[in-house]
Amino acid sequence: MGDKQYKTNSYTDFFYYAFRNVLFVSVPLVIISTIILSLPHSSATGSASGSDNLAITISSSCTLSSVVNIPHNAEVYNGNYLGGIGKTTIKTLCNDGNGYAVYANGYSNNEEGNNKLINTEYPQYSIDTGLATSGLTSAWAMKLNNIPDDPSPTPPTIESDYNNTYGLIPSYWTKVASRASGTTDMAQGSSFTTTYAVYASSSQYAGTYQGQVKYLLTHPAYPPAFRYMQDVDKWKNELALEESVQAIDVRDGKKYWVTKLKDGHIWMTQNLDFDIKANTTLDSNTTDLNVAYDASTNSYPEYRDGYTNNGGIIYWQPASSATTIDFTGTTVPGWQNSNTAPYTANKTDSTETGHASLGNYYNWTAAIASNNSSLLTQDTLDNITNNPKNSICPKGWRLPTISNQSNTISGSTNEIARLNLLYNKNKTNSDEGLTTNPLWFTKNSAIWQGTLGALGSDGRIWSSTLHSQGGAYGLYFTSSLANVSNADDRNVGRPIRCVAE
Image 1: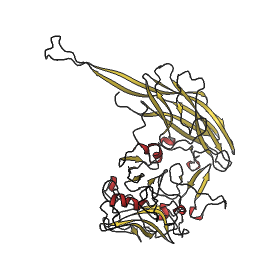
Image 2: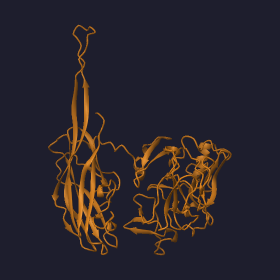
Image 3: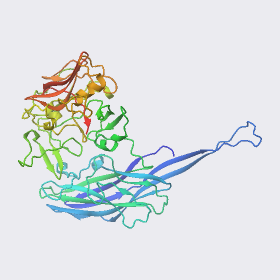
Image 4: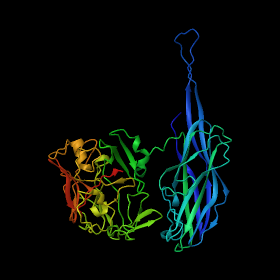
């Protein structure tokens, strides 16, 4: 087959009119593959005469089409939940025996990855995706089902998150259905249905809401030619030892080099470059926000101020003083040496790219996705189970740990020290194995009292391990030093390298 092609112009529109819902599905998707046959012709005498070259192109196509069987109209009043909204049959037709996969992605406001129902008049009242059936937060979700009377020999397989259950509207390309072999009968095809559910809380603002879900058919059934950081569990086993690939952070579309290292983990091999802004909300679908609620006290720990939990999805809203500071040179105006707000800084005049990218600088409060880390005062080197469970890393990733466990143990929780053993020969007087392939740790220096230290002189990254009051552990190195359990004030700005769970 020729090169596979992907097109993404099949979508569903979801409109929400004063708690009334309308869903439209339209636009076929076509994928073309080609076979080129070269048939030489020679003379019967066997002489070295010229030959004719005949090129034949045989089109291999699949289509993705949809028919609205039951109009997606519904009235959902305040404080009510309604499932089974509408019914659309989505059919695939292929003229060869290759398999296919169908991916879905939120597409509200023509923004790829936007999975909200948006109030067209007052966007601040938009409805997030979720599984809520009661409470104070409205939500919507989607469900896929095989057609019971599908006449095809093998109906498509629906992914478990959507098979007979409502799942989140994806915020990045997510496989929802697939079939191992194609549908060679163009008249028969292979089909599944999709429906939606909405919960409208008693506090939801009445008005007109609009959302979209976009579908992508891949044929043959190869995954799309991209990897997402948040999908690391789906592709991490594909990587060979010390193989490096690029993956996309769905939160902002930035790409990062990641590598499977000798310790068995996949690490980011360039620094995190994610901005934190006030008046924005991050959630556990995209960000490393884990255990957040203390059931014994029916509250959130104080350092998790700004956290909420809705239907098992954890949300964090950075404090109003949170900011990402863009700066040039070595002066970082507005940087506060504070543990009571998350601060990040981005050096905009940097020319480094790829593995050498500077990324952002984070105080430790920002690194652990907190609005106030000053209440954490207990050294956790002896017991890292007491480390914060959250971070600003993408979902499926976390901050590395430092412990007093021997770095010679496979799977040691002294993770930065173990890399130093495996790649820097356990040296403490040299950084030669830290700054080269495949680790590529960078000498970013750090931000202290609004000033960036001398680039190229030293390198530092944060860990999730606490060091008494006001401090946290991390890596610190120079050309003549490698300190894998360096303690620094938490209000210092350091880069971050995330490691896959």
